[in-house]
Structure formats: C-alpha cells, structure tokens
Image (tube, rainbow, N blue to C red; front, side):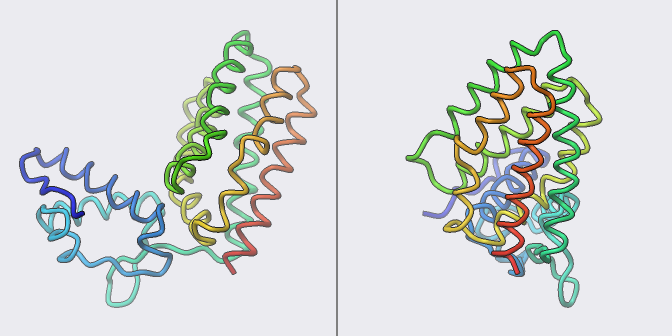
Length: 219
C-alpha cells in the first residue's frame, strides 16, 4: 500500500518524514547499494514536492547513505571491502572510548541497567530486518551516549549512514547474525564486571568480526 500524501504537514516536517521514509526504504533493502533514486518518482510516491524530496535526499547524502552517480543523479552509496574495514576500525576506536568512560563513571551501574534493557530489544525474534537494524544501531549509539561525551556521540553519528550502507551491502539475509543479543551481551558483562581490558578486547573483536563479515559479503 502506498503511503498517504504528506502535503498537510509543514515543510520541515515533510522533509523529516521524507528522510525517514527514504532511510527506511534503504535499510529494508527496497533500494539497494548502487540504485539510482529519481526525484520525480519519489515525489509522486510520497505525495510531496520535488523540492522537499531534494532536501531530504541532500540530508541523506550528508549522512553518507546517498552519493552522486551518473549524470549527477543520487544513488544509494556502496562501500568497497577496504572502506568497510576502515569504517569498523574507526567505530572500534570510538566505542572503546565509550566503554572506557562508562567504566570509570560513577553512573556505571545505572548505565549497565540501561544497556541490559537495550539488549532485550536485540533478543526479539519476531521483527523485520529494518527493526533489527534499528535495535542494533540503537544499542551502539546508546553505548556512546552513556559515556557522557557529546563529541563522541557526534563523531559516531557522522558514521551512521555509512554503517547502514555496510549492513545493506550484504542484504537482509546475511546481516542478522551480527545483530544478535548473544553478540552484544559480553560488552555489557565486561562493563558490569568493571573489567576494562576485557571490555576493550570484546569490543575490538566484535568490530573485527563485523568488519570481516560485511567486507566479505559486500565485495
């Protein structure tokens, strides 16, 4: 079923709704890496103006989800294997900083409780691929937010579009094994045990395994 036209909303709300709809379409696999996105078709499908679609697509380009293709058309970004590995090395550095700051924080116990709650979202099995991606990314973003370092969160969010692209490189059938509760629980266990060396080791391995998985299926 096609979505209802969004014309009753104001321009900023329309742009945000369009951006979320396009991001969800990419994350769900409706649009695959390399696919070109046409303004006219999208505007018609969403029931909004081409200008609003163009603004939403520009935001997604800034996020790294879209890139310029042939004849200046925007297409869904794709990452080469070495770029996926570079991406996850940077993620590892950021998230290792996050666990370092959480472990040294007086709010560590409260953070562990919040992370345990996020783990339960990853345990859900009756969810579609897009929901699983959101649960996985939400856990890692939460990890950064609980560090209490706004610059760390900003740096992680600047990578988020490319993280989504890396996940989509393999498609819905190949990515879910990397998003299970069991793969994330050891990170929380190490934080709860106030074992910094274990936390850093687990997170390093977590990101290395993800890099190998997504680089291999992407290229």
